[in-house]
Image (tube, rainbow, N blue to C red):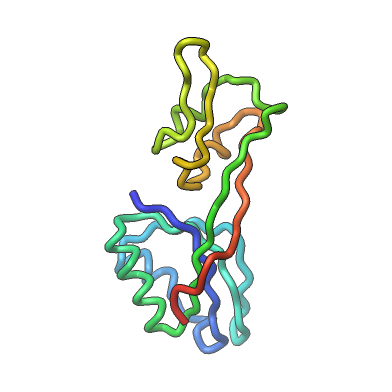
Length: 143
């Protein structure tokens, strides 16, 4: 499953169109709204997490470009508060790429940020909120 976070910038002409609905229905892209401000007849912005097959997400991004929606890719950075973490291991079961794993010799929960894709599953499951996610704007994908 391909997961990325994008900022969508809607011109006022597109702010009252069912663009996200079409993205979901026609391109089978799952979206999770992280932040947004859209008012009909005004410019608007959405920050969305896209999930789906990589080729379908790319086709959806091309559709957005055709609709004159600006798209910027966001990088996500996950970090762990070592003082908060009490090594329960709940996050390891949620991590799809093995960036969080248990070292069996001493049962320590290890975090490898280089493997992390920033999906945020660990943030949602952590019972003490020791995992945190931040976003950095990377590049304009479409205009």
